[in-house]
Image (cartoon, rainbow, N blue to C red):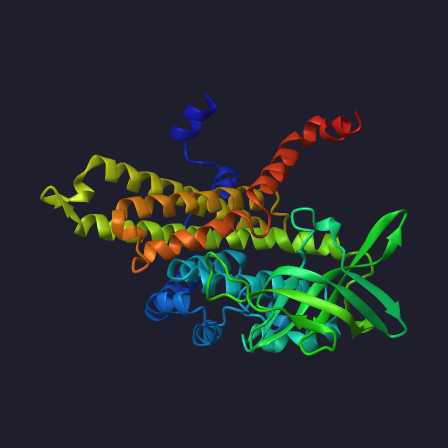
Length: 411
């Protein structure tokens, strides 16, 4: 009866306020459209070149900087653009739609490089480092993963020992983005700084480029993301001032896990962009490619592939917006961040697979853009928390009311 009455009568104000609005604001649409125009005009035509050569795309990074994308989701009072997180995700999707390498360069710089300084850095540290980072003139990296510490982030082995007014750092970080370019300014790392009650005390320390004892290995030879900068970092008796500690001693792991929550939402947006590029290419190719005298888009088998791609992309996009909206509301994005990252990354992989199938033999050729999309997409299921880890986090959230997980661990 309540449903019938609500359908017949004017909706009471309390229900009107609770309605979900799927429409973007004028400002959000403007940001999306401006970034889309830039990405399609400047990034998309150059993507194949940078993928083939492996060169870092400095001109394209400068273009993103001119649009203010490196400052987009940060408060104006610290030099940011004052945009919301949904706008940042919209921009991320459009950049990824043109090229995943440019998108991960932006994501790693904003979500992983700048965010720890914004959220946990002192006022002095923010004044010291943020201005050129938000202007896109410099890049900052995020050093969590190690050769023996990936999904198990607490297995960190890098150590920092206090020696007077300095921390002396020894260790290695693996698969780090944006640390070895000509405009890289430093990296924020986790390191063991002691122990408490038999447990590692992990802290966050900023290491500036050029610090003696800090070096970067040559670029990895990767399956995809050829134009992004990814390296191993080496710390050998690297001395940094004690003032480079971010936040308090022992808070490092907690800080980095909080940063990864927002990063996962951004990776979800990146995945949506790549998936949309797969659909874009598949629609254009299926309408133009003729077999048996007709476009292959007229075949039901092709139409079903396109329909499934479009439906799953829209679901992934809405899940990403849901998680981003939680961040904008000042709430924890868990488990929405894990759900969005899990679903969007797997959708992108599936869409890339179908795009190659729709393109047939041409899709297997490097001249085809879907070949690059196919190579670029797999890492989205791995970086910033594997799909397996996301499922663990989601299950923990779902099972929390039943209080079974901790009880089972004790058996």
